[in-house]
Length: 149
Image (tube, rainbow, N blue to C red; front, side, top):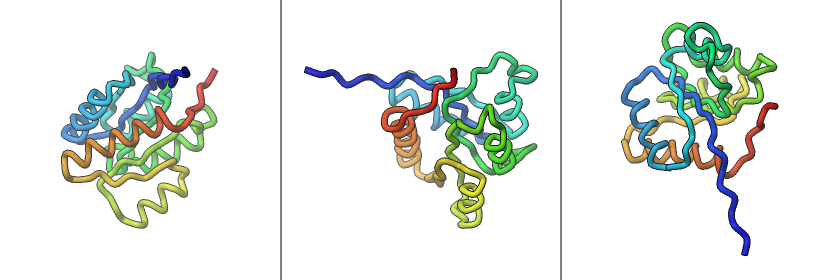
């Protein structure tokens, strides 16, 4: 009798300036009971500080997955994505763009900047929770994430 290995918990960085979307994301992660660690930053500059371990984020862990809103204060998500994917220390981290925009231009630009997935945030609460769960399940259970040594 074989046992199915349990997925290892991952560190997820949510880059989100909307408190309501942050709360729904936290709920979705807690409901999944996988034990992932969710860190939240509220703007593009703070995201880069977290990733580069600067200032108050000097002890921040390197995330295994980034959920990135596009419409952020200070640096928008496109600039953050561009900087992540052009940095050899960060470029391996999967980035899921999670945004309200369904504009073809935003989708195309995100993929050109090497986003790993683009998800338009559902406005319905239950659908939003379901979308977050599916992202979490896919990146934690289905795919193998690189584990930097």
